Amino acid sequence: MKSIIISILALVLAIFIFIPGTALAVKEQKNSNVGGSHQVWFEAENFDSRDSNKGYKLAKAEAKLPIPANTSGDAITDVAGSDAIWLRYDFDISKAGGKAGTWYFWGRVISPNNQSDFLWVLGDNGKVIPTAKPADIDQARDRVLEETVGPDYGWIKTDHSEGHTKKLQDGKNTMVLFWRQSDNTVLFDVFMWANDPKYVPTDDDYKKASLTTAVKPLDKLSTTWGEMKKGF
Image 1 (spheres, rainbow, N blue to C red):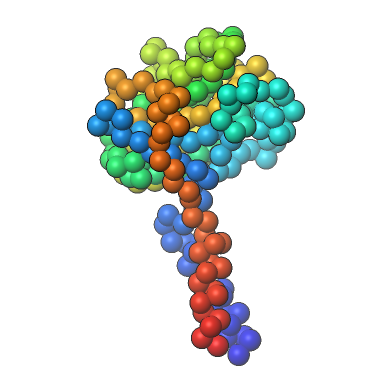
Image 2 (cartoon, rainbow, N blue to C red):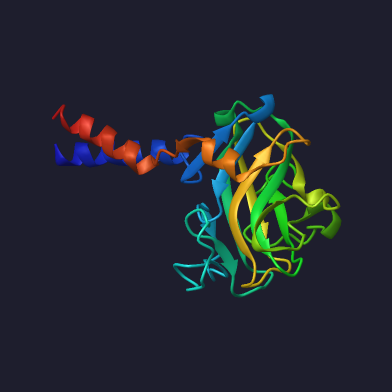
């Protein structure tokens, strides 16, 4: 009987690993439909993964930096600028009622010296998620968040930087931020995607957006395993 239980558990685990969509998404995605368009919001510290060197760090919890009182949670800063550092975020535009097409990326940031980074998006930039900065990442095509803003946070998109305009896919999408210029004077607080080029995000819109909490595969597995054990 014990061997049967172990075999079933292994099978269930395999199913949850390989079923599309069971991968973790950003821990707390917020969604809104201001002005009849669609917006997806998530805090910068809620990344899904980062490089092993952890060059991008939680500004307060890890880098021990003072951050403004109006920061939403913690923020992200860069303490080891190099081509090897990155942050990955998985998000779902369908939760905001959005569909595939052209979307626009914004950040609530502090950047006192006009320092930008690179934005890579699965499907728009390539078909395989990179674990190192791609050789073909392009300054004009992929540069984002290049604007001087501070000492307080500001929402920036940088009109001259094409990197803010990307083609997103239906449902789940993946974006990766790669280092270009940022350092520990830069703070990333909240990121936002919108499908309306005229929409300009505000702090109030973010606060009013509805919360979507990602479901963890292990939570699902725990529930399923508990139900299965009742049958033995």
